[in-house]
Image (cartoon, rainbow, N blue to C red; front, side, top):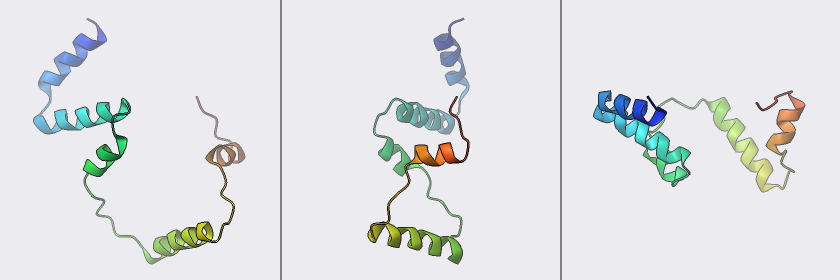
Length: 84
């Protein structure tokens, strides 16, 4: 059985909600309007602490002040992360 045949078989077993979530994931992975997919996700309901809010504001203030940003690749190198 091919991967596509296996996938078709599994799709038939999904609930409508599971199928919708899978469709959103596949659409996003294909590069089709990733931002719209993110916007469709449920809103985060976790409270943001005062410390977290202060850290975000500090970062915004630094960006506004022109503090140089560190590229993500440089951060990965510094902390020893190697892609697979």
